[in-house]
View: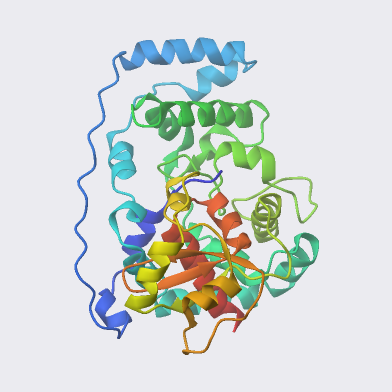
Length: 352
């Protein structure tokens, strides 16, 4: 699992031009930014909590030297909590999120990155079966093609979120995985820097994902997802393949749906009831032939293919998408429809 990481900071970089100047479509209704739900203050003082955590780390086999180094002078960082409460995937609509990220500057940089890494991408694609444009798109979404990988000490970020009351178990587990990385000497403590959520490297892997999916694709004896594009792209592709990416099939497509057809869809196709929030915001999967019968059209107004391939509907404010099984692999990387649709659309632009 990979979590939202540098999106808030990249949003600042990618939205310097107002959205209205980037997209000539009619203005959308304003979206009200939700007020983050307050969470209870942890009942245990931080120092007591940290003492117990150190004891547990020792019991899990982490060395005393690693524990002493990792937790030296550690205090929770309130800025990290603020970032957690204001992620752009939570405060922007899907349409707004896509518009902000698929701007001319990002599209140009993506094209340059695809050209610069052409040979590496070709080798990675041959090995894992994940299309180069998908890898380039995720690379851009995660770290602006390696330009920004975070500025916060990973242990501080994870400890802050593990102590916080919103998702303590999740980040406590990741904190222990971060200690494993340090204890194995895979990264030195001064270099263990990442996002506010503790994600690391250009793919923005959580520590558990680093240990499971990061690869030494260039074969130099070191896994370097911070500075070696071959390892970065290979690791992302390894993740997606393991998550179920099927070679030779697409992620999805944008579709045209009239109000009448949407009413029919809402009546006949139920929403999913399981999975992360993004998955529960999708419809159940139906064959393309069924979507065709319902009246869903290609963007140019032609009929959808009459095929047995299944798709789910993801809805924005004005834009709608039928997404296929490979879309689920992108959601596994980051379970946000805004993110996954943006990756898919950016990859389509790169692939043209």
